[in-house]
Image (cartoon, rainbow, N blue to C red; front, side, top):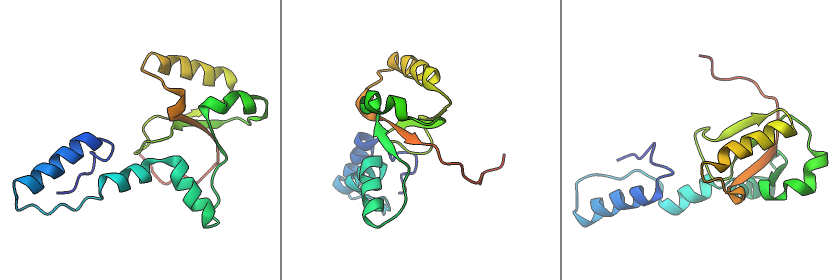
Length: 130
């Protein structure tokens, strides 16, 4: 069993994995364990590892620390959840007003400032063509 698409559904993944083990199904599970997935989805953890090995990473602050950096932000920026995958909840923000507007929209959807980060935007090469 490969659990692509369930990577962030930790409770569901664990339930499926436990059932496979408990009922001795003849299914080989090829997934990473839950803790490995959680680490891989945690931007702070991944960036610390990358920095430790001398990789360059975008400047990143927590949304909670926005006030300390507000006057030093250079737009555009990236506004995204700190634990996510697949490009979900990632927004390119052009200015302060757009950032405030986006955070207000998200507040209606159980927005938790501790779960969001602001990153330096780095122009790259488009690899996906639709």
